Length: 86
Image 1: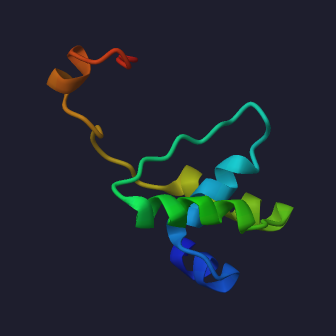
Image 2: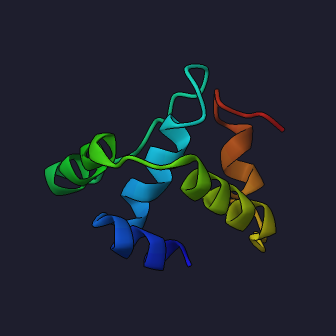
Image 3: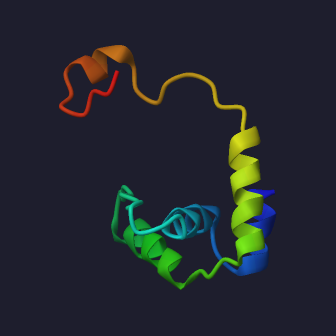
């Protein structure tokens, strides 16, 4: 569904996700990673994606329903990180 909405909006799913985060308010600041200039430029494209309230709500509903499993990083990595939030 995210892919379909992104296609409809003329953007990538990643741009759509970043645009949705940007729409959450001034207290949400997405920090995206980039492997290279191509990905960095793609991420900046999120600034041009405009979401209606209805579209933002659709994305929120999909995020709430998402079946997310496991951790992004292994516990050993987080134990050595300044960003450990466990």
